[in-house]
Image (cartoon, rainbow, N blue to C red; front, side, top):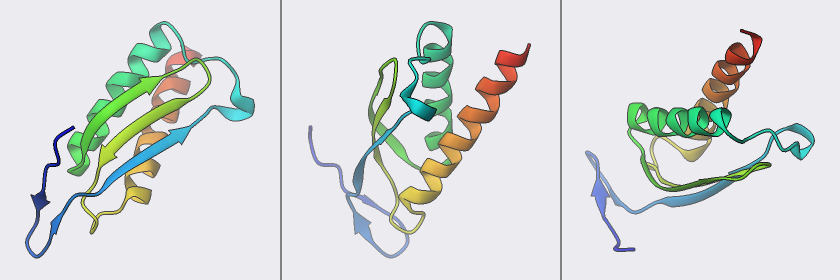
Length: 96
């Protein structure tokens, strides 16, 4: 992987984070249509928030995400946005 330096108004940075999370009780629910929809949602949020997804892998019981984030925005905000939207959208789809 080539190092890509990015910049904003006052800093040059290369902040890549490896984020891993899993469903409650590590249940094996991330498969099939849910997996595809989850991948779409995870790709949408970083684009909206000014982050750059590098790699993503969805396993039946957890998700690995390597993402570059502007240090002034913060990884905690990005993860909160991804988990919040994916939970809301996937739960709403499951109700229908």
